[in-house]
Image (cartoon, rainbow, N blue to C red; front, top):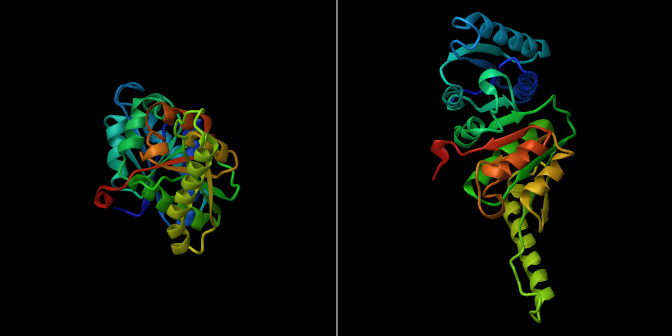
Length: 278
């Protein structure tokens, strides 16, 4: 894998925001930036090459104007999702605008976006608009393999940003009969156990990364609701592509639509690379 960030562009405003985010991320982390555009034949008349090349040139000019990062470009052909999945295998991370024009239409909200986010070999960062830096990275963590990969990425992001990392975990309460004699006691016991288990899972990460301020937030609430709330003051929200318990559907199906529709800051969806899979 090459130590570079790949950003896909299509000339839309979210794609421009994605270029700005990717360029800043590459500069912070000492990586190069590769800008790609998937040129679908026939979409812009004849083979569309001239128009596609112009999209790349504009994006490259914007990235170079920001300074401090090596920029290369490449015009790709074929179908959008397979082309971007292939790029993810060769990059440190893949950055996309939240929605776009032409081949990127529905990239986050539709099946193509789910395919890219769910099957990319590594982190996929979805950018909606020009990011605002607030000094906070948020990660959803439930102890699963995919959550571990998300945590690693989130810690790296927090470290290079000199930002706080807030670990979010939500759970739902088991159903008890309200007529049970120990009803209130059972609820309190479950809450204490969940909070203790969440802190136990986070403790090793805190011990191994003393240079990063890692805090935690747990609640008896749907995890997506917690992530949406935390995202209001975050630079970046990080989730695993799938998980256990409360985060099992955090980026798949209807729950993922909730996160991606309501979180305005960039969202990173992280899937363990094949060599990391157990």
